[in-house]
Amino acid sequence: MKSWKEKLYDYEFILWDLNRFDLNRSLWVKQAFEAKKYAFAADYIRLYAVYNYGGIYMDMDVEVIKSFNDLLRNDYILGYEAAKGLEAGVFGAPKKAPWVKEVLEYYTSKEFALPNGLYNDTPLPIIMDEVLNADYITNKKIVPLPTDFLTAKSYKTGKITITPNTYTIHHFAGSWKSWDEKMKIIIARIIGTKLTHILGNARRCIIGKK
Image (cartoon, rainbow, N blue to C red; front, side, top):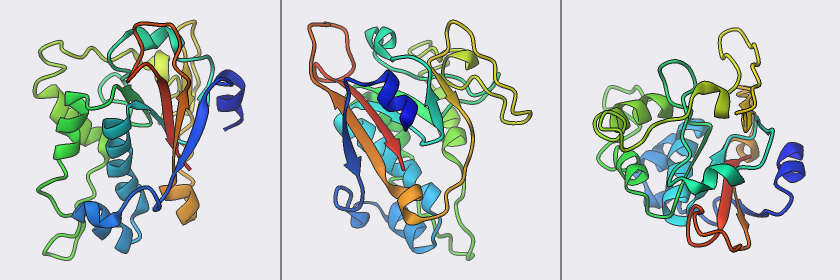
């Protein structure tokens, strides 16, 4: 989080944990938590937080290169992780954004624990691809940013490619070792400014999991 505080020094950070999210709110989350599959529970919680509060979600292994302020003119922050495939480690939207709601609703009628004893372990990037390509991306309602904006690193090779467009680097650490690292979500909100085109209710937001 060092780079967050350096580049986003005027943001207020609010911690999300089980005091802010009731496991009984979602059967998917409850089952994933009980199975100790915390990353899948966190997939739902990040969507829930962005949808209900507005903001920018970031994984804790995301390094901030520069402030998001220039991107806040848009109604969303969403990019590609690779040539095909959305970046689920960094994304943002205003409160109650319809596209976030549609991704969130994917989980509504589904259970994480399947009758055959296996788990519905479809990762969030695939779910986002499936839901958003059905309408929002196909019909140009959302045009995801190129890879160098939010990811800037190859998951396969580890090569980092920073350009003038780069806001964040997703390091794909994936080193979730404890409940604290897997499930805590941080929401950070900047006090409203005179900007007219910003995400959310006259506030800039950022959230991340810890």
